[in-house]
Image (tube, rainbow over all chains, first blue to last red; front, side, top):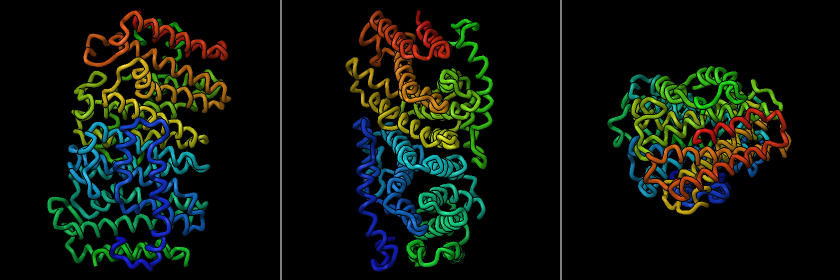
Length: 280
Length: 280
């Protein structure tokens, strides 16, 4: 969404300010000391490719919105990106989506082979937990990530997708809440927890995460509707106009959930507009 | 090793006492509430199959040896078994060892398909962290598990194996220290940490874990030497007699590292003898 957004806006300014720190930390933290060399190379290959870094930026923006120390949240931000990239490596496998390319280059398994790709995915996931566990509130953060990734979260949503029984609007909402929503929700929650935010604020940001996760997905479906003809998507199920309407509703929901934060939430507020702007 | 061991011995008695509690907790905890149904079924399929439950028993025996509450360590014990089973599901995939059976029944991917098997493996891993994170020392426990599983642990050892460059005794030791040793070491460390053991005791148990991990592996290699003809193993590299000698040395090392615990370590001591007894 960066390319479509004026660099003078709060989100673009925040991104310019913090993305270099994220990229630097990802390169630094990608593999633990003593990592097997070839495996570390495979981990870096996927982790350090061009990504939008939405999840780590959400961690930092949520920390900032709650008045926390953004710098201190960088390792957690990296953990969320590692968990995300871990899932992308698996998504591309022949047994899953069977994609040969990702983020403009060959998929991990096309370069390193399936076995190493699976191990790189696993090792990135372990590394994500290792980084979160180093915080004083590490147990809470690990629990958030674990719940988001597990059978009631991302893996559950992916399993819904594979099973192919998604037929109604509610099915589609539930599937995406797991597939992409859970990790986006965890990103903002982890940022808030690291800023010692009170329960009410964490809850507001959870609602924000749920709403932008869906808005983001609907917008993706609208942008991809030429290539996703075989899948059940929001536009295939509801039509283009109704899908845009729901994306708009989710955007409004996201903005409402930020109201109590006042001007502190300008980055998250602007990010919300940026998501919707992608398909207008 | 159970079948070869007299039920009157300390380890057999400990196993009879605690294995039913482990099995019960595994069945109870396998999937989180709200888990996607088919995925939860695939997780249970592998987790609740007949296993030796060595890692969970090590967690409990280490907790007991350090004077802790064994009951309280059961969730952590389950987490270690989940992490282990998670790795077995991946090991059996066509891209890895390509095994059709595991623990006397069809491999997970032969029943549920590769995509669901991969997700079940991932979801079990997430569940393991979720359970560990619920302890008051959850951050420390998650860090132990993450380090054991990651690129400098189990995934690293598996990557060594896949790369195929294992040629010397040192290579073989390093590979197995990662592939199987790291999780066994983490099992006893986590049991000790849950019992608030002092650093010296945790260190002694780490040495114990490293030693039995290798003794166990060498014994496995000796038992499997008819089927493992293509792989570099301890007997293929060193011969049968030398391999038995090293297994004996590792057993002695394991017993020495338990000395400071006195009679409290009788279960772990007996387990050590039981490992070596498998090939005598």
